[in-house]
Image (cartoon, rainbow over all chains, first blue to last red; front, side, top):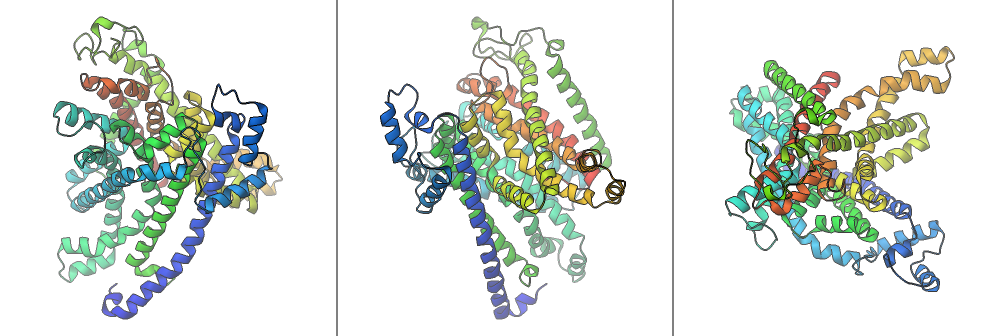
Length: 325
Length: 273
């Protein structure tokens, strides 16, 4: 268990090699997912009922057929679907996500403008959720049944409550009644507190559950008994040995986690009137602004791929067994 | 492992709650005589009282009655989405397991891609293509949930396919279609149905979320998410508008999740992911 600690230089090389090998495999898979997401987006674009040029011009446009034909040629819409698909992939490679129908601005620019606010929110929520889950799981794993019962009830409640309702409750209590936090906007840090808590609570429920189950499985392993018999304090066993073993189950949750953060942002930003990627997605869906929605879908696929690759590598670094493979 | 006694109490409470919810969905009139749509502007935004247990909304409509009458549209939205997702997942999972290597590769890679996208965003993409409204929200949520179900059915089908009784039926000369429908599907679908109970809870929350965003049933439907959406501007003066419809969603999801998890542990020995 501790061989990499005893022979540090060799251990370091093993870590690097293992990580590099995994990195290569992961990058191939990541590329496949990205191309897949682009294909899904392109397919969705083809499925939109009606003529794309009419949609682009909006209802009530008095464009003549000649003008429409010109627009069609400009956007390459008169070409066969396969050619359009290749052109589309080519444009994506150069980072060109097209232009929003409704706002007549490049989608990449629109997203870049809103990204900061959502990243801030998601990171704050993630840190909060991980800290809360770590505390709750280590405090309740293998302890008194009463404490565990309360914790699992809270977890069930957290995963059963719609995040936007939690947001409404917090808003009502802390902004309207107690007037501690601002009602809307993203001006300062105090405006970040309630949205971050709202986004974090459902995550905390699931994370705590997975962490605790992982911890309890590990605490039953023979090596834990060995560590105990060496006279290690229970807390040290938990923190130094058992926690490391829960990285596996938590790593498999990554996809779900990123999804909850980005998806949850749509609802949380709406409740708190915050600008951001979520609010932008909703705006795109309501206005049938396909390039905008597609840009956001591709962005979330990219985020997913980046985060899951990163987590996988951290997982390899934490678990020596994965390096020898 | 939770204490068995407390686990049983939870199960009994959750089941009782589900029966009540089903009753409210089928016959909301049993519980209240007030109309969910009749407006009474003089008594708008009245606080909860003996006359209006949950208070009244911005148009003076009885909130208790609206929450009760909202059970049917809200639950149907989640049920419809789950049913669509289960049907689609079963069909695609079977096709993937039985349709040969190429079909399997294409379908499962497509599932990987869809699973990498947040369900809500996928649903927003679907709503952008399909348009808003109850039916489209159901379809949108179903699209987001199909890949998960398809994967489970595929895995189970591959196990069932190699089992002795399927081989025996094959040797007896059963037609392929009959073999699949009578022997493979019923045995492969079990774990998915157990998962679908918890999935229904998630679908309910997701669907009410989309209608909270204004994409689902339109006013005056008392669907819970839509009620929260329309009441948002009045939260400052009337907390009850924000509390009760959301509590209804949470209680329903809680009951479904409690029963679903129990079923999951019982039938598969696994817990929800």
